[in-house]
View 1 (cartoon, one colour):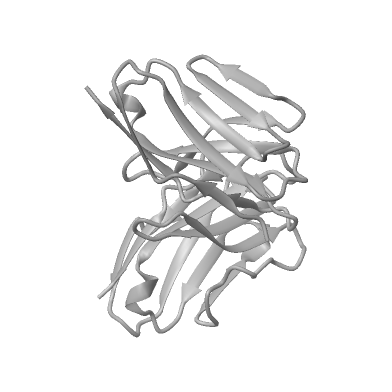
View 2 (cartoon, chains in turn red, orange):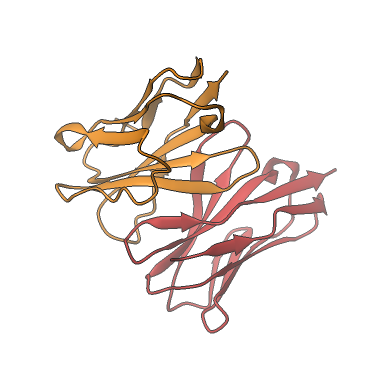
Length: 110
Length: 114
């Protein structure tokens, strides 16, 4: 079945850029997603990318997709302490449900 | 409703007891999903309802777990004879049919089995 992998932790300084990486094994789906989970809260859709795109930019967020290598990344420019959260990438499996990575815990130090 | 509502938000139960967790999806969302998030773990898929189709139960970890969705709306996840390893946050999400819509998640039910 579909497998989605992420590194577990990332620590950056406030003002730096953060890059969170994700790999997936199978993508016949049309979209790939990034979700954000703040402490004690559910997941919130952050952004997504259509699979025929290489890049999508949305304010401080840039999503890069390399379909050949099955690699997805999320770049957060000018990272703020309020960006501290767990970030999940997700892809659809053949059964039509989202499969999530383990989540990357982003820690932003002042 | 405006969002996905889950109840209770917290549940402490004794080992061996049965529990029921409730999810009220966004009105009009035909798809409903249950996931489990354990400490330090990612999101583990449990079960998926899509309209009137048979649910995808492939993620349920044992026959102690079951779920139903009545009238295409509210869903209940039932765990029988709870064990300590069932302690986790149970998240419900709903979406419109088809890809591209993403999911809207509830805030979850934190289940603690003592």
